[in-house]
Length: 115
Length: 286
Image (tube, rainbow over all chains, first blue to last red; front, side, top):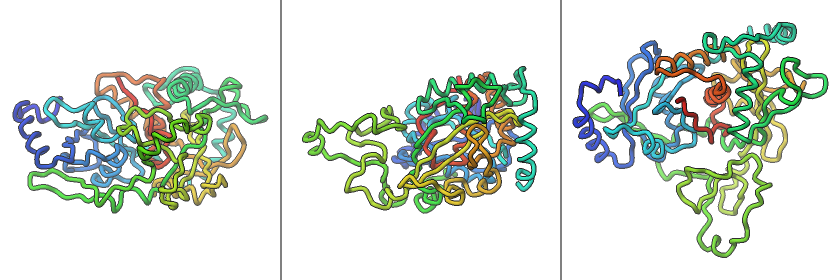
């Protein structure tokens, strides 16, 4: 994972992840990474805990809300090089694509690509 | 945009007379040649059998495409709830001290789309296997289905299901044509209510994300069918595709033209998020 988190070693990240998962047993810890720095979402929080039962679609909906994206912007989200089906639950995506450190890394970029 | 409407007539005429590109500009511009549209369409039909190639209505044949592969269509796609029923109210968010944004589902989660068959029913009615022919347009196998006793789909109407959710279920026929002016795929929608009466455009706007309705969505003549339909305007589709191609490139891989219609459908699902055509597709970019 070529993220800023490289500076923290795997073991530390694992511990942090276990801690957060213990305190939120029904949520999945997600770290959002911007694909490029050209984004219009300004500085947003990039750490999310979402319900395991969330559908991928709900996650995207929520993300859009948090990012305050103009509704005519397209949001590109890939997880482990995949564009998951919208009806997958976050727990099934997590099981498939989680990082060895326990976090789920989600890449996004956005573009006002429609309209 | 107002300019769409002014330009539509010009483009529909100009598109007919413009010579269609032979050389690929997919990677540098995100546009597609008719040949690339065919490749991507074949791939879609192969991977998602709910989509099929169709011939045009007599008099509306597109010369740049084979007679039996004029446009792509999928019929009877369920749309179980309106957009304003998603999201809002169901989720509460708060921020933790160490900067995590926590989303929580409020109250018991309603799952009107899933009907639980009780064990008694299953053991007594083993022979009552639903007729496959009645399930057209539905994905029969859901690899991710966790509970075996839960069947997906609105086709099993049971007494337990709230009447309201049945009433709201609409279906859509979606088609994808090749836009000769913008040289991209273009999506068209025809919706029906629960009694299979056609929806008016205004009713269909309930299923289109707020800001898109009336802006990027226009009512125009379907090039292959000749009927007036709601369409998602393709003016920025190439730019969107190009953005996706660049994103892949920055990740060290190259976009494949046969993925193009999958990608196109993925992105349009943010315009019509409750129309469930996309729900079974999981696209690997590798």
